[in-house]
Length: 486
Image (cartoon, rainbow, N blue to C red; front, side, top):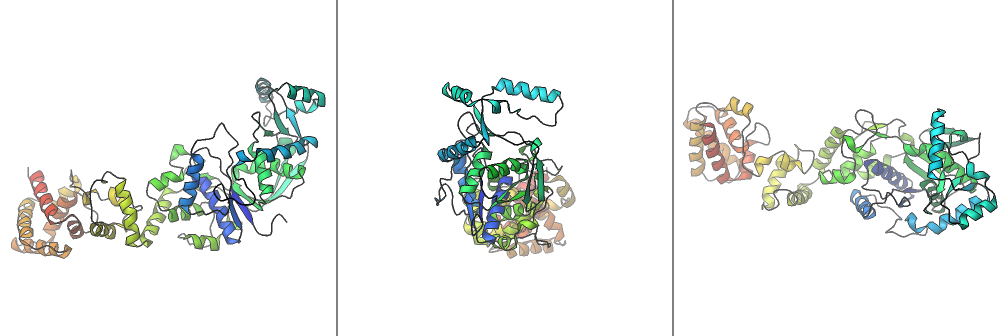
């Protein structure tokens, strides 16, 4: 047994922002560990120095903390199996690659890029199913190898894949999986810069860190035979594998930035809640076998199992994310939303405008049932913060009549003469104006809403008036009379 309790890891490369696919992998590992009283490890696979992005590690750690995936061990949480940055483990990989070389399970390759390109082109002309290295350097003598190394000839170290064997392993999600070694290339294990490839470092680290379950994306399924061979060659016990389905766009193509946001930070900046994002991402390929869609983290932990993960790709449905975010937002107390709202205002074009907490709470009370994100408190009701600069033509054509200007003029007079304390006082003013002119109050409601918001939808018109205040109400009525009476 690899370990008495489950140990899983999320092992991203610091090549940019955290992809939502990466978030799902991390989340499933986290849920599995928590459900089974195991450990969740964060390991940074930074051996691809050409793709390394400065600041990406710090960004990754910040994002993991924001979404609430608290790992037990990691770069900033040392444990007994560290270090947790692969670039700090090079001596460890060198020890194990030497063992493979001694056992002829790996070999030096000194082929030039030009020869490899020529080999690939020849195989393509032959219409072979895939390009593979031809083991040319496997036949080099010990003396030849030593001489080339002595002369500092550029080289890599390759996996010596045996021909005509069947590699099989059990996948928790996909069942038994088999590959022929005839379609498995002699993978590079150590690059010419001395750094290990993902394949070598991944297997060594997973073994030494006692990882019991490797839960990762489907894109790594074709690499697993190479990893199984490495475990076999190094005489190590295999972990259990679980390969997650692809994330897809609505057109069933692989999720990519070309068709929308893919970085977790993008959704954070757009005002999505971490609980909603985790909830949504958890459902991208998994369900509990019932109709429940709204989850908090503790419920996900309780119900999650790898056996309920689907094999087929999961479509990233932005409408569903918006719905879930709105539902999570509604569950928050107004005081919690207030802090989120104030942070949003501070980063918006309204950052230099002062609003009292009482006013903001009035806005929250009216808008929380109407929006998907906190950001929409502003974008979906701009008239709560500034005077309309235009009026909806369709709505105004329906409600603006020949006597609308006269009715609103009388309304201004009555509002000015009234003591306005709350929203009910505006209703009283409209009723008084309607009685004075012997018309139904409906003749005033449309023009009044048009004056205050410029549109025919949104919160109750008395609520809008209460939020913007008496002086602004009067001024907006004056403006609409002047604008639409020309």
